[in-house]
Image 1 (cartoon, rainbow, N blue to C red):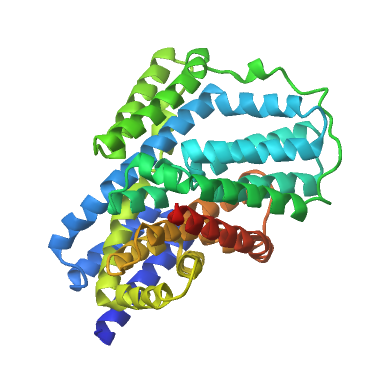
Image 2 (cartoon, rainbow, N blue to C red):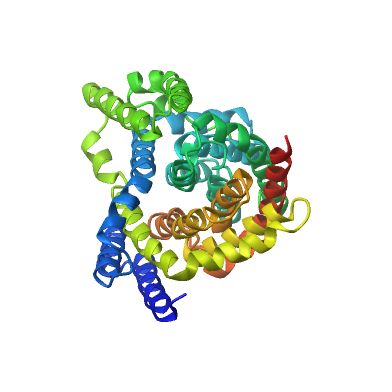
Length: 429
C-alpha cells in the first residue's frame, strides 16, 4: 500500500464528507461530491477510464431511487398517506399504544415499498400534525417522531427498492429482485419486530394511555386527487409484479421504475390537482450527482488501500465459527456507516467483498449493517440528517445529537445483532 497516496485519498474523502454533511453556502451535496471526484481524477487517484466503471455501477441505483421518491411524492400529494394515517388514528379508538404500534407498522410498510427516505420525510409531518390534533404532549409527539425516523431505516431491508444501499449492492452483485426479497424476508421481519418491541419499551412512559379520537376528520377529506388515490394500490401491485418479472428477465430495476414514475407523473398532470412541477423540483436529483461523485472518490480511496484493509478484516472474521462471520462483518459496516455515512460505507463494502470468499451472506450483512448502522449516530445517513434538519426548521422539535446517539445505540445495537443472526439462519436454508 502506498501510504502517501492513501493519505491523500483519505484527505479528499474526509474533506468531501465534511462538506457534504455541513453544506456550506447551501451548496447541494451532489456538487461537493462531484468536485471531490474531479480532484481525485486530476490528482491521479482515479483514472478517466474509471469514470465509466463507476457510472455502470451507480446509474441503476440512483435513477431507481429518484423514481421511487417521485412516485412517493405524487401519492403524498394525492392524499394517500394522510388518508391511511387518519384511518389508523380512528381505528385505534383512543388507545395511544395501539396507535403507536400501527404507526410503526405503517412506517415499515411505506419504507419497504417507497424507500426509507420517502417514509421518513412523508410520514413525519403527517404524524406530527396528527399528534397535535389528538392532543399528544411534547414527550408523546417526540416518541412518535422518533419511532417513524427509526423504523424508516430498520424497516428498509426487505426489497431492493427499499433503500439506496440495497439498490447499490443488488446492482453491483447482480442480485435479482426476487432473490434479494426471499433472502431478506426473515431479516426484515426480525428487524421490524425487534425495533417495534424495543421502541415500545423505551418510550412506554412517554405515551399517554388515551387520546382524543372524537374530533378526527373524515379520512375522505384528505383526498386531493381522487383518480391517483384510487389507482395507488393497483399501481403498487403492478410495480412489485414488474420488479419481479424484470428480475427474471435480467432487466435493471431502473428500467422498470423510471417509466412507472413518468406514467404516474403524467396521470397526476392530467388531473390538474397535483403540482407536478413542484414534485420534479423536490425530487432528489442531487443524489444522482452525489452517488457518482462520491463513488469516484471512494473508488480512488479503495484503490489506495482502504479496500485491502477492510478485506483483511473481513477475511479474518470468516474463520470464526457459526454466525460470527456474518455478525462481525455486519458490525464492521454498521460502525463505518455511523462514522462515515452509509453510502460511502456500502460502496467501500462492495469493493472489499469482491476480494473476499464469503458468499452472498456477507453481501447481505453489508446491506443490513448499512441499513441499521446509520441509527447509531445522526450522521449515519443523508436521510437522517435531512429528517433532523426538517424537524428543527419546520416543526420546532429539536433532537440533540447526544439524545439521538443514546436512543440509537440502545435500540439499534440489539436490533442489528438479531437481524444479522436471522440472516445467518437464512443462509443455512
